[in-house]
Length: 466
Image (tube, rainbow, N blue to C red; front, side, top):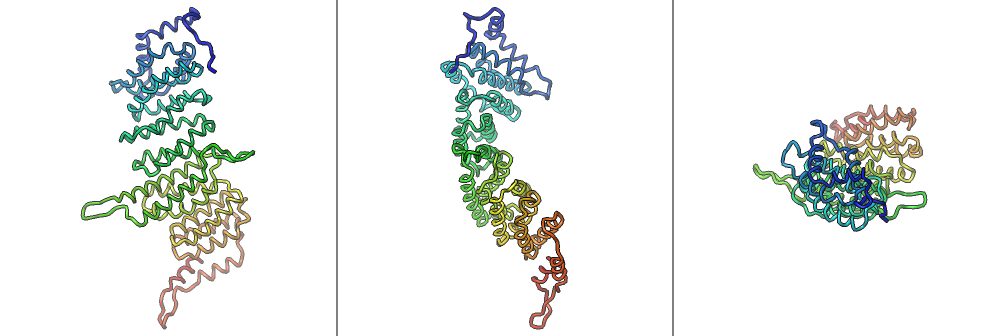
């Protein structure tokens, strides 16, 4: 398997031996790495692909002969005490480690085993010393180290990245988030590591309601990546990757439970001057927030984002509107997540199923859900104008129904939706409609009950709708 010829002391030409003698010398390596740490303009420190390629060539051509000297120096670099040098030291260390991973591609099995016995404890030490300024360098390290490689040759670094999910929580939110960030570099292998994606999916789904927001955000991204390659191919369905439909159905069931918990249990209990946060309600809200982000990421990461389960979970995305009404950030994220569905090209099967869901939502007792659904309708039609023509009559009836909804906010959105349909030609305006609106707009507010003239809420709705 690994039979690429490498230089040894016995077969090394004189010009090649010059480099070997330099890099086998500890003093030279120390001075050289110190120079690279300082060889950057202040504020412009970045991972240098040229230096990475240089080191890769050294490890590719000379094998494991140089590893021990560099490993010793790597430990010194990541434990640099001088604050001004810490960022540059991590950058240089990341460049060297990336070169080791990439340059060892053609080493023998024994050489690779020996390398990873030394590299694994070092990388564990790195994960305990990461900072916001240095994390991106180690992300680049694994990205370049694994880029465009056969996963069968890279199973050791893959296994190391997989092991990061098993690391016990240290109580440090940043370090835990960083491990999941590094794990994302598995995307280099795309569809070629289905077992790893299945493992990641199983591990990450347990953290959807994690108490720390930074970790939940990272989990939403990694879960969407794990579902990226669940695609329908010309010759059938991909079978080895995590399946989106059962996963989203599981999310839907948990989301329903979270909604019920949050609606029954107040998030904050005020007792005198003490405010207590209910842990169950907080956990439910955490889960809801993560699901919204996950749903949005599915449409940016996945090759075929629209699934049957996406249609089935859609009513809950409308129902959540009442829960997130007081949080601008989550509310905007929820609107974006629904917009992602609307902007996707919907085949007949999905369009039919989605319209059925919209009809049910518009009969919901929750007016926030009804308003969200009718607002969604206009965006869906504007983005699917030509393939939605057969459903014009059904959607016209739906909008007319909401135009005379008991809730003012629903009527307002329905009027905007209907006018948009008329303007874009999706529905043709006719004399009957105009006549109907004129009659409704002249409806009297008042009605007589027991001889007394009183304001009728029903008549107000009719007049406002007209």
